[in-house]
Structures are given as structure tokens and as C-alpha cells.
Length: 278
Length: 278
Image (cartoon, rainbow over all chains, first blue to last red; front, side, top):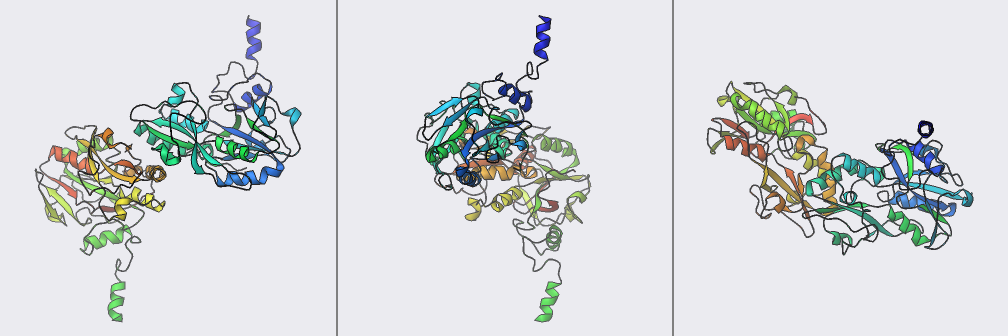
């Protein structure tokens, strides 16, 4: 028993609590197949990212799309064409192996789920990493404001709005938002806390009446789970990382890769970094 | 004509535009009786303050009241007992002469309006200066968000809420709020802009349903003018400097002095000062 326990403890990653784990230790565990599930709650305090990998022939237009829609598509990193590395985002980071799951699209809405991109990697692929909501959600809960979807162990509800993104080349589509509802005073705090995290969608884009942004039934989200809304709550809407995924689906490139929802790239960049240079 | 014009231009204060005027130049003009009206819009970028002058026997309790209710009573300066000077708030500042108008209370709700306190000054008076809403309103409009009460040339509407302040000694009373209504996206910006100005009431205390804080008819404010609320607006409520005035009225000291509404103390402290030491 003792020998076995010692052997386990000598591993870099075992027995560390999820939130205290370093990003490098988590990525290493993912690469080894030791961590296969969602990354939420791991490596607390570090930016996690949405993934979009496109052939180089789409890269300039997608970069422009991100620049024009920085609230829904906050770019935190980008690779050289063909390179699976983004040194600025993490030590020893390999985009082909360091996420727990990927979706591979080949010119249609159907996709294949894989846990390793090594065999299908191409010399013309460009990787984009976009900030996600985990950082601002962590800031809100650290501030003592509870998130109803987390308490209910549900996914956050997401909605397609009637707000159009700014098109760039072939990329276009609606703004998708996530919704969290709060008592009024908590809504104010959530707005203030999230604003700091500009690379994680920042402050909300809407509060109050869902119909004003084209949401006809708040109890029926387009993605995620049914919301938990308590008496007197005010709904608060943030730009959502599903926005770029819908824009990519509108173009339907012959090849594209995204992360599996919830299975994100965990970077070495501190969530507190107010700005980040590529 | 030329001689006359030269003579006028040699004056410190004449011909300066209101917003570009320095606080010292404005206070000097007030002291000389050359400026007698509201201070809104003057000496842009500098903190303006609400005034409360009390006998020393009330000072400790009122200071505690401010400390416990910093959102409605943000203390930006305090004098020594009997001293009409607060050097930290302004060069050559004399509290007896440097506001355009004062209200003098002598143990009842009735008051006398005066423009100079020199003849009635007492050796036991302590002056408190509290931040006011001008600084955050200026930040909101600088950010490109319009204030409906300003566009309509009205006073901001103010309401007594069902939220109680934290009592301190004899001082107690309800929280009074001011209300500004906005389109949703502007409401979010107004929340973010105002939060920076912690010494000017900071972020709002409530958004949305007025009934949640005991306001039964938003069209009938307790102070100020009827609000302008446009279709789809969301009301946003900030803690208001009338709160300490109501607390003082609840005590009804034998002697107390406040400023005339809108006729504030203009300080040398930059509105951007995030924190201020007494």
C-alpha cells in the first residue's frame, strides 16, 4: 500500500486539487490521457480559451472577424501557419494534444470527435485561441455572488440574438449571448466584476428585457440548459464564444477544428492580465 | 473700450469658461460675490462636495454614520473643531465664504438662507464634506451616454427608499437614491463609469424594479423633478447625498449648516483620485 501511494504521489499531477493544479501540469495530464473531462474549475486564476483551427486561406478573414467583434471573440493567441505551438500562451504547449477533446469538421455541420490531432494535422492550419467565460465567472463567485446555473449543476443557457456581428470577408452571423440572472444588487456587482476580464467577454452586452435583443422565450435557450430564474431576478446577458462557432458554420470551410464544449485550452496566462500581446 | 476690456481681462476669473475655471478661481469669485449660482459644470474634473457643519458634540457620531454608510456619505474632508479651513481640500479654502449659499438650521426644519457664515461661525463647529454625484455624472456624459434629466433641463429625481442606513449614535434614517434611466446598453456603461468614482457615490445600489426598494410610483419622486423615462428604459438608482441630510434632520441638532442644493463646495481634489486621505 505504502509503495503504491508513494509511486502515485511522485506523479506531477496526481493528488493536486483541481483548482490548485498548474496549467502545465493539467496540460501534461491531458496529453498523457490522464485527464479527459471538462476543464472548468481546474488551474484557477488562469485564462482558458476557446479553440478555432482553420486553413490559412481563411485565417486573415477570421482574424478580421475577431478584431471587429472583440467582445464575443476576444483573441488571446494565434499560431504561425502550420505550427501547433503558441509559446506566448504556455510553456511546452502543443495545440494538437493539450485539449481533452476536439471536433473536426470536413465541409459540413457533421463532425468527428477526437482527443488528439497529431494524425490529421496539416501544414496550412492556423490556430486561434479566444477567451471564454470561465475567468469572469470565477471573478463573480470570488466576489461572493452565486451563479444559479452552477448551483443547479446546469450548463449556462445561451441564446441567438437579433444583433448581427460585424461581418469580415466570408465570416458573419448573429451575436450569441449567455444569460445569468441575479437579484438586482448582485447584477450590479456581476457587471463590475466581469468588466475587468476584457479577454473573457468583459462586461455584459444587455440587461433586462430579453425581447429587446430578439429572445422570445427566455426559458427556451438555443444552447445549454433551461435557466434558473428566481422571483425578482434581473437577467444579464454576456457575449458568448458560440458566436465565432456560428460564424465558422456559416462559411463551412472544407476543414475546421474546434474544442468540445467545456473542454478548453488551459493557458499559462493569468486571468488578471488586463491586456495581452500576441 | 480697450482700456475697460484690458482691466476686465486682468481679473483672475473673468473670461474663463465655466468648465475650464480652476477651483481656486471659482472659490475666489464666490468669496467676492461674483459667482452666486449653482456650481454644476464649473471646474470640470474636480470633486465637488456636499456640506454638513455640526457642533462638535455631534461630530463623533456623524463621522461614524459616514463611515458606516460610505456609499451615501462618502467623506472627502473634515475640519478640526472650530476651524473653517480644510487645507487638504483646497488652497486658501475658507468654508465660511467659499460656497455660493448655505442653509442654517437652529433646532427645527426651518432654515435661513445665507451666502456667508462669517458672522455666525462658532468655535465648536466641525465641517464635513461629502462627495456628490457631479463627478460620476460627468464621467457618464464624457463616455458618450446622455443623461435624460440633463437633456430635459430638470433636476435629477430622488426617492426615499425602504432601505435603512446603518445607524450611528443619534443618526439614522432611510437611504435616499437618485434615479437615472437608460437604454440597457447605456445602463451597463453608466454602471461601469460611475463605479470608478467611489468618492462620488460609486456604482449604483439598485437597477430595475423600483418596488423592490420601496418606491411605489417612480413618476412621483420625493425630491427633484419628475423623471424622463423612455420606452424600453431600465431605471438605475444611486445612493444620494440627501441621505445624510435626512439623518441630520432626524436628530435635529440645535445648530447645523448645509449647502443650498446645487451650490456645492468645489475642491482642488481631482475627480480621478481613486482614494483620498483626510
